[in-house]
Length: 411
Image (cartoon, rainbow, N blue to C red):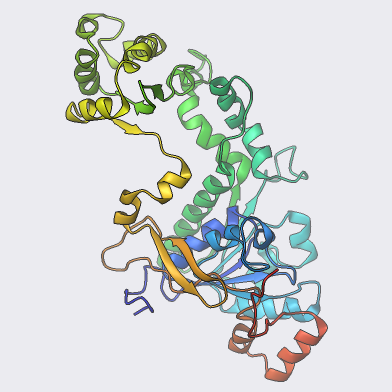
């Protein structure tokens, strides 16, 4: 049983060596940790960049780091030192999965390519998160969320709604590609469970986001020759947005035939049910902007509460519009148990998000709170056979870092 009394998750007994930074890789490995895997986060002596990004009580323990690094143990290894590379090799010998988001030149320089590590552990599942891939002309360029959003259509699509090219209001490329990496790793692990063979899993941010965005927007380009542009009209209709009411803003989203049959009489436009422009899903898809224009002045005639009551009674999809702050305070979130409070040994009372995926027989759990930089260096080095004297020498040389008991002092 884990410390919170729950059974180990579906990946209990699995060891993951995590050499990823910022968001895209840590997001994927955090989910592996939630599922019960022993995730060992290998950091440089300066730590993951996100340790210093966002609100923080103490140096190197920012909110951004806390959010993406639960259920991981932290070891510091300076891989420029031979002793650091040796320690990593010993970890790889014990690992089931290795995840990295370094650029190809760095992988070769540090001797941590797929070929290098599978020579040590042939059954290793090796996941590499990259920006573009070797056959992409941008391969040598750095890739971050903003750039990938711009290259793969997200920025332009937002611009159709806002009037100017705009970034999505969250690191969508990082988060989405992190989930692609998680899926790729789990697929390779399932194959390994059947064949005993490891695999190299490459997740490209450009490819992932291109596939993600074109899933709805390939549209007319699905046919050869094309029957229309790569664009799903409903998603970028200038009138597809929350509606102003008499006293606020709500979302109203009739989509199915059933919902429209309930909604149009509700706004006093029952006659449109027999209008051939709106009678079927296919016809409505070509005239949605006109429907939205009909809705706009009508929705303004009642208060938000009045509309939400009427719409809910008619079983038409609708909701109030919440800010992230309101979401944190939403009773529905509390009832779901998604946001939980914990007493961190150095950071005091903190909130963490539970994994939203629910298993009945082997549930996810939070077993390890986000670790201070190098918090588990000595423990992990001892596990892979380094003596106390050898570990002390690594601390002296700067190969590793072991924080004092008073880690997490105010910055």
